[in-house]
Length: 418
Image (cartoon, rainbow, N blue to C red; front, side, top):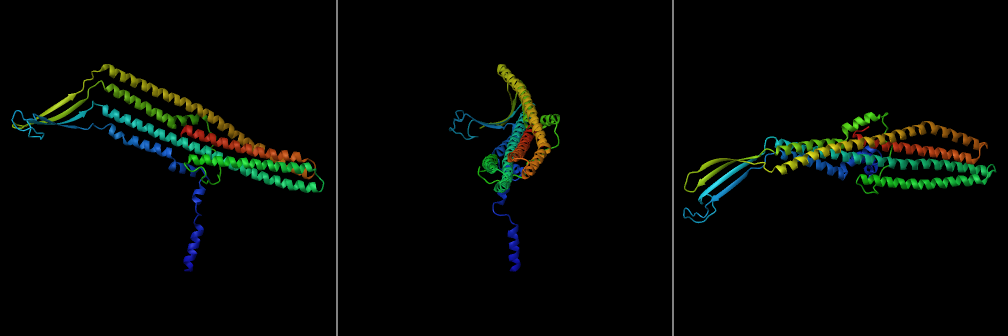
């Protein structure tokens, strides 16, 4: 019994508390993306539409269903003097016809290729929707991290201000500094507390936006974000252009649309040739000998004006699909250049703030503290040094957040992870 109780106690200690799994959502970006792939309704809709398009490709190239015709001739039996009836074999003559429509050579294959092209467009639209959703989640996560990190920085700053306030009050108590220093220290504490309230509001707003993208209640709990995604090695615009031209779902959709329009044009041109229908007929007179007939029906492409109109329509649709591809290509490359410039600028700015300016302002703050304690600098100089380091840290956070958002834009435009 003691062993059993001990085992149960150890198991209870190793099990996560109730709701721990849900609370962990939001700690890292990978978990959010995995959750969205499984639960996002728009992505599920696009996936089902793509599956439906693929499921219909087989039927597009199949032969039409055969038809069966039953003909009852002289059902009043006027020639034989019998009663009126609708029973086969009891009328004057019964005929049974089985026929199979046969499209002209190549039409079935073209219809199948058109269906496959539409399925490929559905796949590309699904991929584009997935990239758009993921990009939105990445941007929202970056904003969520920015708000949480801003709050953390303000908490640290507030602790420093409180320590400075204690120092000022001690020095004021012995008459080393004026009362104005104590009042200014308390003002800085109040201003930082106000900034904390604003940071909390922004974090709640960012969490609500992130939950909305995940199809969760806007007030659903989210864990504190751990870190922004790691920035890749230096990117080049040429490599990004090649990736976009080769992997962009938008361009893949337009290429599939061009192939579909080209096959539709070829199918329209095939309408110049006739379709056929083969049939076998069995004729059974009531008092005669049954006979078999073979028949063939052929359509006559006589309506030339209608056919020419359809051919012109197909040609214009092909040109429109090609123009759409060029428009998409220009739009993607334009947005790619803009996002790349923003990414490079924010990344370089973050590097300067982190590696150059931040060490400088920290050294300035250290010197100002030492000078204030020895009475060589006034309290205003110390406060300005603290304000500068706070501003630099917040500017660095903003630059890193902007870099992460721009990176998500680049991944959406190129269709590949970077």
